[in-house]
Image (cartoon, rainbow, N blue to C red; front, side):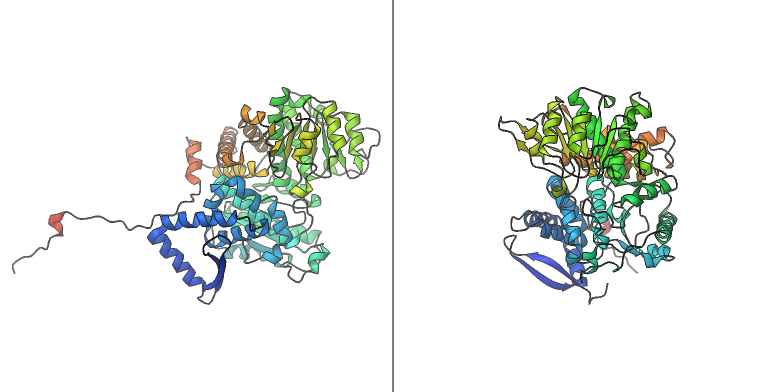
Amino acid sequence: QKTSRAAFFPVVFGSPQQIMFAQVSWTRFHHFGSYCRKQIHTVFDSYHLSRCLRLTCSVFFSVTPRYVFLMGLQDHNEKLFYRVLLSDIERFMPIIYTPTVGLACQQYSLIFQRPRGLFITIHDRGHIASILQNWPEKDIRAVCVTDGERILGLGDLGCNGMGIPVGKLALYTACGGMPPQQCLPVMLDVGTDNEALLKDPLYIGLRHKRVRGQAYDDLLDEFMKAVSDRYGMDCLIQFEDFANVNAFRLLSKYRNKYCTFNDDIQGTAAVAVAGLLAALRITKSKMSDHTVVFQGAGEAAMGIAELITMAMVKEGLSKEECMRKIWMVDSKGLIGRDHLTHEKESFAHEHPQMKKLEDVVRELKPTAIIAVAGAFSEQIIRDMASFNERPIIFALSNPTSKAECTAEQCYTFTEGRGIFASGSPFDPVTLPDGRTFYPGQGNNAYIFPGVGLGVTACSLPHITEEIFLIAAEALAQLVTEEHLAEGRLYPPLSTIRDVSFKLAVKIMEFAYKHNMATLRPEPSDKGAYIRSLSYSCDYDDFVVDSYRWPEDSMSVQSCKL
């Protein structure tokens, strides 16, 4: 870049809170970093790793400045950024992803420093291919795209939703080992219906209402074709945080044409079903023995319900019998036969009208309740404990402020008998009798990095629902009896990179067994092949290759003329 381009970066003197921001030219900063890496990269790495850890963990910083600091580190020193994440993934994942990323997205225009990824607007129709040509990397294996209409449980955040694809793809590298240069975050800016953003002078997106209808569909069609033309039909395209009205139909439209999946529907489903499969080892039962009630009937709930149905069918039930065991409560109450979307029709049953979840729980006496919206009252939790020895209670909404109940409430109201999982992290809970439980976090990060790694490693052209059931089963198998005794339904987050690796191997084995993979020849050792693709956080060795010739060849040779 030109020498006039400037960048701000933190220079730390003394304690972590003593920070001075110096403005230096980009060229001088780049040369300084190169010199350090070439001459003393080992010392440079360990020194700055310890500094970054101290600064990021400082009690003087709230979560948003920590997020800003880590994103700045990602811009300036990518290897160090991932080294920091992997040094303590349990500590740093909640900063770069849920729950902090939700707050960061709400303030994204305010904390915005430099673009990361591609911003494609509705006005770029007809030119998306040329925009992709301008992206410097030619070997892209994974694209994460959003239009910002339904960011977590926060609603329409427009362009501010770019924090989600950036965070997701950071986890592809940190948790799955996919090289960051092979990942591309994309924001499709079609406007926003959020009035507060439209009036915000700092808002970075288009300042008009959302464009819908044919123009929107044309943009998506052009984008999907342009990505596949540029990077290949086996380039993974992950849809993220699209509104219900678009999520289902776009998945149905593209799933058999491109290598794509919707993480809110399929990723959430896989991690939830993995938790249920682990819970079955506690209840000593089968999936088909359970009756499940959902609070919320959106894309996440529908995805989970479909995958539960697949798991029950695998146990020998007919699909119709499986669906009769699944009930859904939306904003209007227990869903019936009137005025339903196509997705809800499958899980609509004849029943008396009930508008409150409390009434539904008392009437149906489910063995499991799963919420992706709303709230669990104390009465609901106590009722679940009254007619179940080990009630299964999943509160999956994100971020933490949107959780239907806390881990402490679940364990307290069920006297420690509840089997709990949540979408956001909760601290361990110690009951008055001294028992301590470590609540399981049903984080999609257990699924999508492993799925992405496995799918791209074997060049899978399409991603079927069976892939996500395989991933859920593999994840559940990694939960040990010790984990279950502690209240965990998922392996510790500290092991997530190994979890992703094992999921990827299972997916590769399934793909080749069913002739779905297109990579040829088939790797004989799939584990070794996947490890060979993994990104390393170690600095390259810049030491000059030094050696000597034989002494007699080094001496000065003379001859008489």
